[in-house]
Image (cartoon, rainbow, N blue to C red; front, side, top):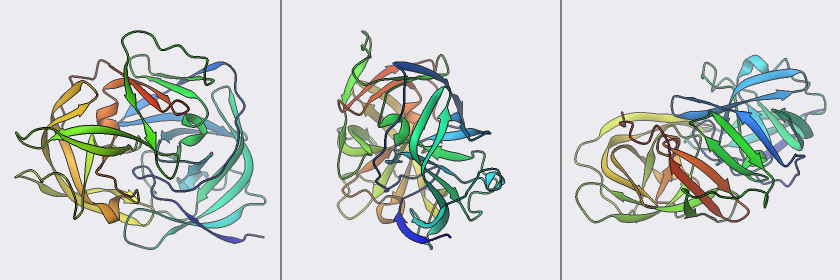
Length: 311
């Protein structure tokens, strides 16, 4: 029997989530997981039962233990006995989507067995044809100190308190508000003004470098030249906005120049209250990263992509 349950989440493949569950994972002291970096996103492979599912998108905006599979090709491959039907609303201005949810399930990430997880299988075809198959977040970032090394193409998961930060890393304070989504303060320069300090949350699933949110109290002005663009697709519809260039994006002591940026209406793009902007993968992938949720710290170190031109 499938029961209707209303669940509020935000987006998929691009946008953050709002679903809160507690769970636990089973780990060793450290585990190395291969990653792929494609089209400004970061991907891993998981196994549900005997089904291996590649191209699962890493997303800091997913603040609960679990995984969502949105490629319809996998619907018949996963055992959905005892699944319940849930409604998931997100970014966009259309109707929410539906999924089948397995509770207290498990799946594997490399050699790591993740227990007491939610597995959600999207029931519509809104993401049919997408180059990725699903999304995972807090199951990793919320339980491990997570090092992402783009030079080595690997992610290392450490039990909290069992990793030593070596010299050469820059520490960025990280904070959380009403959920498990990480925020940092960063600065932007739109033209030639003084740097503007903004409160941004990290959406590791966003392909953009930075997304600046248009709202009545925004702290910045738009660039003189912008183009209307399709930004992405949320669980509640398509997201449109503007695309332009900003002079600088400043993260800690590091300055990224001539940065491609998008500008979107806050109430459609983001459900995070008081956010000035969103930091995406096209800026973060220029660093090797260590996410330490427990100690509210992000560590960054420039990698081989640091000086790559923003397209």
